[in-house]
Amino acid sequence: MWKWTVGIIAVLCLSIAYAASSSAPSVGPKIVIDKTRSGDHCVEDTAFMRKNHMKLLLHQRDETMHKGIRTTKYSLKNCISCHASTKDNRVIGDDEHFCQGCHTYAAVTLDCWECHANKARPAPAAIATTLPAPAERVEGEKK
Amino acid sequence: MSQPQNNENQSAQAVDEHRRNFIGTSAALATLTIAPGVMVYGLAQSKPADEPVSNKVRWGMLIDSSKCADGCTDCVTACFTENGISLPSTPPKETDSQWIRKVELKDMRTSRTQSLPVMCQHCEEPPCVDVCPTGASFKRADGIVLVDRHICIGCRYCMMACPYKARSFVHETLTDQNPDVPRGKGCVESCTMCVQRVDQGLNPACADACTKAGHQAILFGDLNDPNSEIAKRIASKATVQLRADLALNPGIRYEGF
Ligand code: SF4
Ligand code: SF4
Image (cartoon, rainbow over all chains, first blue to last red; front, side, top):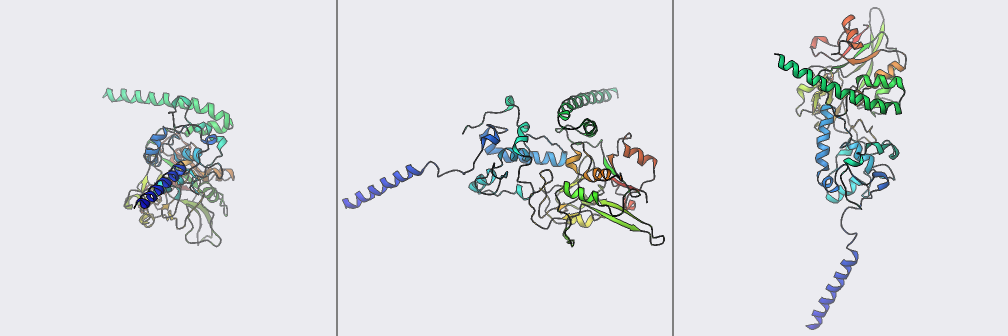
């Protein structure tokens, strides 16, 4: 009987050691954010954006479509201009891409790109002016 | 009676100030980027980005078929390029989107031919909006008729209702759309009067292309503004609306028939 007990304890110890060694990268989406392109801050606080970006987009969508309001702060084009991959200028493609990475992880269907261009145009150099002025920016999460 | 007038004056003043401020800033920006002549022209019609479109404006176009050149398709090409539509396949497929097409008319007695572009006529009483079961087909306050693809279910009722055959259905998956012109499979679409350009104070792509080609057959402007060139021409010359008998009051008018 004691042999069984020792065996079980040994297996438990090993599995705990394994879990500890591999825990860091095993959870969360694997998106790559290039801060040279996006700058340090999103248009709102990171935690707020994680939870509410869809509401901002939905609101902006109706304002633009029906009222012709074309402010850039919450526009989809503004999202792409910062969050597109520096490799291919896109926000979808594989799980390293900003939109797709998170949505695959969260298992939420992503319909925007059936119609909207998923590629940033113009190139990164021309987009700096679309970021809010420093005073307006809300402190985002530092990585 | 005098109270509302006062209010109106005040709000008019506020708008005026707003506009002056806006023109001030954008003029500074514009001088950095574009030529002075272009700048002045662009500013004449643009609204601030955060201001909703208003029904004080009614956008329209006047097409002079006597100036429209036989065989010229510059307006069609410009439209397709601006809106990211692939040019008609050769041989043309029945499913190709057509936002604008050149129509040739021939008088069988005299053999006189003339050509003219036909696109969505941006009706004041649009049948496509009447029949849409979801509210996707709608008319903006400034008279531009659009399809909200977020709401369109692709039933194509509006295509049946439109007397001008102005609408197309997107049958195939699309990629690399113009960022300003989202389009995709399963929705109905039609001429948007280049709403993405009009909101910036530019002319629709077809009108600019026609002017560039030296024909000047398409005049774009505000039908409600008595000082606009289009309103003046409509007030002084004989122009027609296509199928005027339907009483839809299209924003597109024709002359030179
Ligand atoms: S021309 Fe056709 S699509 Fe355009 S507003 Fe009129 S009915 Fe609607
Ligand atoms: S196809 Fe779309 S826009 Fe046309 S009637 Fe149906 S839902 Fe409305």
